[in-house]
Amino acid sequence: MEKKRNDSGMRQVDAVIFDFGGVLAEEGFFDGFRVLAEAQGIDYTLLSETAVDLARAGGYAEGRISEQEFWTRLKAQTELTGSDAELRQELLSRFILRPWMFECVDKLKAAGYKVAILSDQTNWLEELDAEHGIFRRFDLVWNSHRTGRTKKEPALFDDFAAALGVSPERVLFVDDHGGHVRRAEAQGMKAIHYIDREDFTRRINDICPL
Image (cartoon, rainbow, N blue to C red; front, side):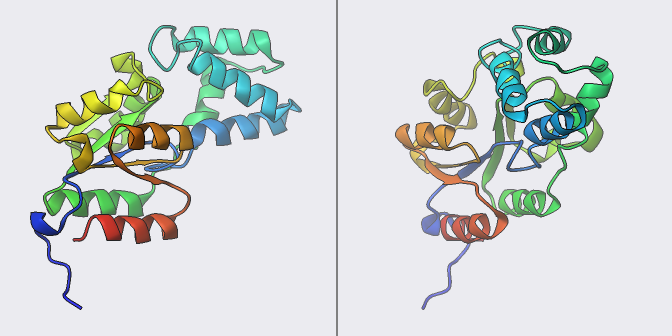
């Protein structure tokens, strides 16, 4: 069998777009709320669903309300207690970067692929970037807290591909959220629904030969 060569003629895509939490890093949002729920004897499902609703429908992820307002509303709607600083640290500390995933990003970029982040995140992503220097490794980063747009909007995928200078059909999108994956595919992108390292590694090696 002919060995796969590192040239554009063998590639299925020209760019790879990564989600942040749950792909490039551990999902600190849900992991943090799980720890808080256990520590305070709160129903985790109610706490996490309320937090998600405030982040999405409530507008925190789109930058329409502040972090202070997010915590104020969350504590008012649940039994959650603690200072904003203590609560945010429980979440931020659990967005643990996956070194092997960033090694993959670096290899893709070195091989000529465009690499990018498309995330429905809050101001926390920028704080993590300030600490770890995440953004400099990517060609483009769109965070919903800055753009005011989330991956629930199908047109966002077209606009992001255009900003990268690549047609949607030449893009691979990687996300741990099934709904986002389906929307990306509906816009013509190839996609990987991230489940675990082994499955991801096998699938990206098939789509993006190095």
